[in-house]
Amino acid sequence: MRFMVIVKADKDSEAGVLPSEELLAAMGKYNEELVKAGVLLAGEGLHPTSKGVRVRFAGDKRTVIDGPFTETKELIAGYWLFQVRSKEEAIEWVKRAPNPFPGTEAEIEIRQVFEADDFGAEFTPELREQEDRIREQAAANANR
Image (cartoon, rainbow, N blue to C red; front, side, top):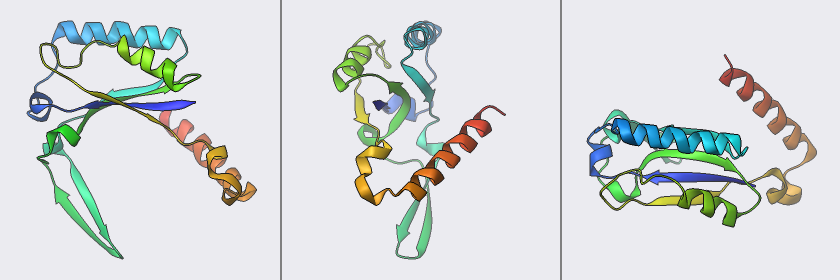
């Protein structure tokens, strides 16, 4: 089972305040534990939304909206992608994480990632083959 572990933004992360050396070291140690346990598939911090955009879809129309975005509690500051046996295992790993915003309250959301079997018969053998090709190419792109 794969889970996306989402670190919610706060006012400092949205202001572009970078983590301290101590937090970077603690996160590095935690990430090493995740890798050694075979749990970590990916993980990154994200720039604030002032450097981002949103694309709004309305039928065939696309509108680009420049950041920053104001609803801080709904924004993402970073993420991990875990592969674990259960949601409970993902929760246990997250509980061991350093507080991403030391000295303040932080929130980390855990969401299960859909797997091919979750889509049932609608995910035909042809669509599964296409998905496999896309994943192989994406992995090759990541290794460039």
